[in-house]
Length: 76
Image (cartoon, rainbow, N blue to C red; front, side, top):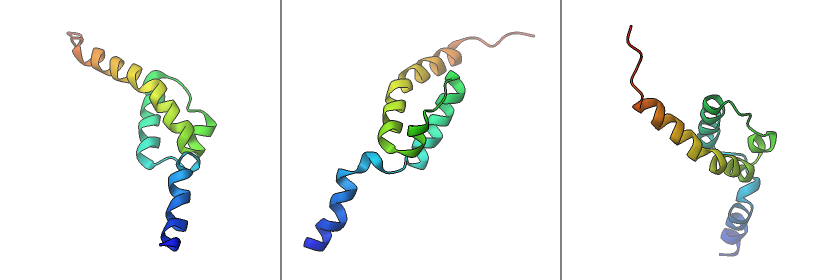
């Protein structure tokens, strides 16, 4: 049990200083491109700052994507 806790405890306590997940990075790149905003350097290194970046910009991204889909496409 002690060995199990030694292995698991750091991953639970230090989740924010782990590297961002591939899904987080992919979503951040899409948000960055669509909203034309840079991804902070710390967000590319650590899961905590990446989470904050995604939380801060995800709603604006969703609103922009939903309004662009509802607009009629230009007629040629």
